[in-house]
Image (cartoon, rainbow, N blue to C red):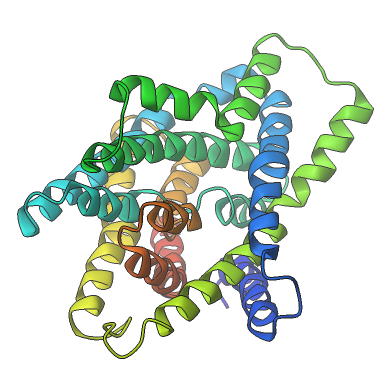
Length: 324
């Protein structure tokens, strides 16, 4: 069995457990929201802070990795955005959500546990996932502004101010900036505080994956309640759209990342990590944004579900190609 299947089975197993618990209603109905808020506001900022603080600044400033991975995301996002506008002219909100589905991978909640297992004992695994997650947050801010601009009822400030405000209030960004600052100043954290942050951060992955399973079960339940008028999730036109979105996310984005990272001189572990992170399925945060603005809600949920299942085929193949 390919080595990459071990972490994938663990990741999907926790998600399936969350889905089963939600289906059986063994926990309160808002458990997924509580877990997501805990991970978003507490656990994930903690793991970002401690991972970056304990890494020399020279290892964090991997400019080739940052530029290559970031450009792969941008090219994917704007390619899908303009293709969507060509297919459905004038609907920028739908275009933004489709583009986000194809560029915003689950680099935090799936990427961190995956890389930690694949690259045991390497601090660079956490650093690579942290950089990719920060770049994903920037992409999320771009999509947020695009959706807001497409809403005629929204009283939007200057787009740049809206984006900066979203980033300044993001706990992941705040935790990462603190970690980078401590690394740059070479300030060690007190042993007790470092251990506390590490222990809290270690809870981020299982809690997040468990919550994703619950969220997907809820999303599928809501879609089923829409009645016979709602189109089937994996039928006809919907399946074609889901297939195209996952083609961009699971195949084209990692292919772009591979080419760009190599052109920028990235090699060895960071090259493999960058390509694998680019090949991860769409993050659950995309579904939450879709739900907030009621744009492509069902499509986003099913893109995440289908993409997660497809990674059982795409990631082992990609891992094999990278090793050969």
